[in-house]
Image (cartoon, rainbow, N blue to C red; front, side, top):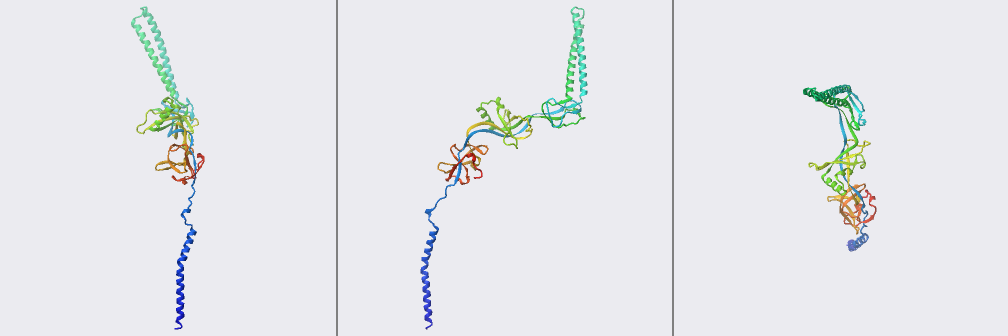
Length: 403
C-alpha cells in the first residue's frame, strides 16, 4: 500500500499539467493570428492604383499632297522594222556591226547591184529611143498638118501622121515608167536604215541568195529614243482621270500635258519622266480597262523594249491633307484605325480611311481632325477606354520600335 500512493500522486500532477496546457492553447492561437494580420497589412482601404502609362502623341501633319494613279506596264519601241531583201540577188556586203547604232540613211546591206544597174541603163536607153521617135513623129505630124492645110496632102496621110505621133508619146511614157522601175529596183540593192536606231544581228551571210521566192528578212532595226510605255487603267480610274482633267480645265487635245512617271523594278521612285501620248477611245468591256500609252525620252537607253515597269500619273493636288506616321496605324476586322487621346486623356479607337504613303507618313482621308492627338509611340500601352499620360511630340519623328 505504501508503494501505490506515490504513483497515484504522480498521475494527478501529470493530468493537471495537460489540462493547463489545453486551457492556454486558444489564447495563444488568437494572439498569433492577430500578429499575422498586422504584419500582412490586409486593409482594402489602403490600395494605391498604378500610375497611368506614358504614351507619345502628336497632331496630324498638314501638307499639300499630289494624288497619283499607279499602274504597271511594259515598254515598247516607237519604231521597229524588219529589214528585208526586196530584190533577188546575191548578198555582197554587210556594212554594219551587229547591235550598232546607225543613223537614218546608212547603208546596211548590198545585194548584187551590178545587174540592176545594167537594167537601169537599158531602160534609160529605151527611153532615149522613145524620145527620138516622138521627136520625129511630131515633126512629121507638123509637116503633114501644113500640107493638109494647103490641100497638098490627103486626109488619110494626115491622120496617119497624128496616130504615129500619139503612139510615140505612149511609147515614151512607157519607157519613162520602165526607167523609174529600174531605178527603184537598183535602189533596193542597197538596204538602208529607215530611221536612227539599233540594228539586230544579221540573219543572212555574204554570198547567200536572197529575195528569190519572197522577201528575205535580213535584220531588224529598233528605235529606242523616245520609247513607249503601255499600261491599262480600270474603269473607276478612268472616271477619276476625267474628273481630274475637268477640274484642271484640260481637254482631249491637252492629253500630252499630263505627266507620266516610270520606274524600273530596281529603281527608287520614278526617275523616268515623260508625257501621255495616247488613250484608247473606248473601254474594253471584257476586262473593264482602258489602254493608255506614254512616251518618254530615252537618250541614255536606260529603258529597253519589253521591260516591266511601274507607272504613275498625277491626277490632282489636295492642299491641307492630314498625315500621320504609318506605324501609328493598326488594323482589325473592321479595317484600319488609329488611337486618339481625348481631352480627358482617355484613349479612343478611330476608324479611318487611308490614302497614299509619303515616306514614313500615311495620308488619312477620313476619321480624324486636325486638332486630334494621335498615339504615335507606346501603342501597346494605350488601351481604348483607359487613361494614359500623354507626352506630345512631332508626328514625323515617331519610333516604329516602340509600339
